[in-house]
Image (cartoon, rainbow, N blue to C red):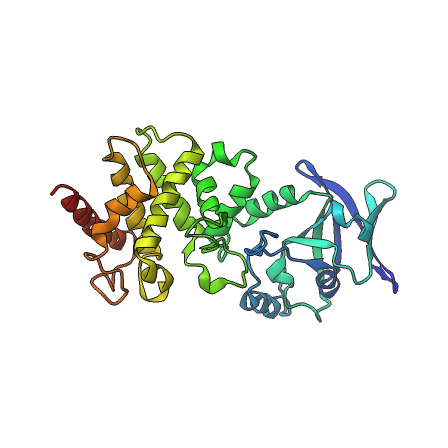
Length: 338
């Protein structure tokens, strides 16, 4: 490795990893940290795709890698096309090549090394690394997802979000993900910006349900009602939107005070979406307007306590949701049969 005030020179090898060209090399950890970045998902803007930084994970690795007999697999980066002005590769004889980085620039996208590098600013231990050459963001995200989808600490909601971004025809290939994302991103939805994707957000306190929970309940609803003619995917979305809008309007205080009520927590989400499946299956006319849902749900207004210190204060998980659903179902269908 050679350094100048303007350029870092790293001598290594060119090759391929599967279908993609890569550059293999060794460099001090602090140099790699100084010239790389993690593309963390910002849930407010939709930019990025990785999980938030976890200082404890990074400090654990720092302690390990600075001990005798420690080692690590190669770090993985991507030299993005849109950062081309910050890097270049000069091929030499055979497979040898030199990677030139603009000194001080962060041009190496961290694909699989965020937490290994996170606390190594002042550590000059030599580490091996592999850099993909010129992957676009979609390709980079796909590789990250393959490497990390089973990793401890990577939330299932984030991997679901990756899947929703990587599918070329989300509406047809994964309608449950399409509807779940739209509930979170539609400004007319009661769930607008209330669903956690697993990234960073400045409105964290407003995130009340995980993307994994939402997509599972939507998937279950679509499966349970597939024998009903509910129209296009947009019409199915409108049906679900009308239902949740009715819930929000009937239980305005409970919806807003989510800390002291179960209605927007996992138990409420699972129970209410199960109830929606029953309501839809029992409707012979197939008309699912906002007013229809408000009328159907109105018996719950004075016959169900959503408070977290009430009857269902200690319920949790899918079994707890089933207990809540059973009571909701009894109230709704006993009232409608009178």
